[in-house]
Amino acid sequence: MINFNDIGSWHFVSELDVIEVTAAANVEVRITAADGSVLLDGTYIPVDGVARVYHLHKLLSPLIVEVVADFTLTVGGVSKTVHVVQSRVAVSETASEFLPSFFLSPVMTERDTALGRKELLSILPIEATLPTVQAVCSFWDGSAVVTDTKTLSPVLVTGVVTEIDVSPDQFVDTTVGELVGYTITAGERRMAYRVSALPTAEVAMLVRNTFGAWEPVYFAGMSENAPEYTRETAMVNGGLRLYNIEEVDTVRSYSGPLRPSGVALLRDLARSRDVVLLVKGVASDMVVVTAVDVKHTTADNDIPDMTVTWRRSSLLSAKLVPVRTPKLFDETFDETYN
Image 1 (spheres, rainbow, N blue to C red):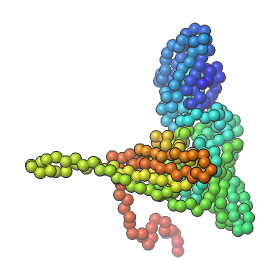
Image 2: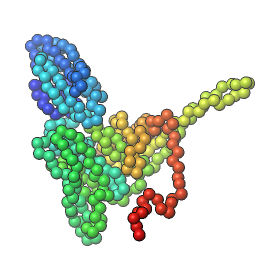
Image 3: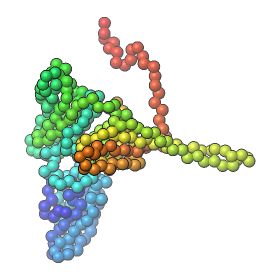
Image 4: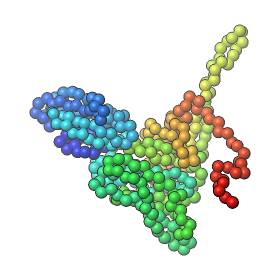
């Protein structure tokens, strides 16, 4: 709940779920989108000197296509244009406190990654001075851990979301040692990654997270195919005929053992509507998650292992991927070689 007088320039949509207006008489409340369309226009009657507008999260959240959208709130003739940031959960800090201190991610602990994996971070800078994005890398040289700082060069713009590629492969430097970890910094923002030899991820997905930004999720456990078939038959010319078969190719993917960062990502996948398969680091087919099992406990000896059931969103959910015999000279051959 927030009083209209306290509304500033930047807010999570969850902050604006209930707006209260201090008024002695009936007050008109109007909300318009950036394109001028009217979303709400009504007169509210105060009780004990306060009028309240409820459930604005349900009204505004679907209209925030990605991370942020602008809305104009007019109360009693006073208008305020607000940058509203997506938040599918309640955040314990205001957007003006959170955004200068954190990347757009629900993960607050060290992540696990491996060479060959695609890693993305999104940043929404609202501070006056744009931060420098750096990677503080840790290498094992055979006897000790040494650090080296690399500067990344994303084009940051105040008030604009920027997606940063923080995949571990770009930080490899064999002249220093073996890459064992790195921390991405941008002003006060920190995101730590531990690089290890993780099992091959059979399934990887890109997910729109709590804030509407894309994040990769990897399933290191097994995958179980459970296709379902609907057969329709009829008696034709005195004989039974099968005239239609509908196939739904359902896959059940297991996460494998998870640390707290992995739990946060799987919980985000469970609440996300936008999920895309990630194949060799490239976004592929849209998928629909049909069931999740993300139970976990706080027991010291509990190692979460979550399950997601999904199918491709296409009507033809089953997919054939041809396997060709490798060529002697493929597209990686350097034709300039002499």
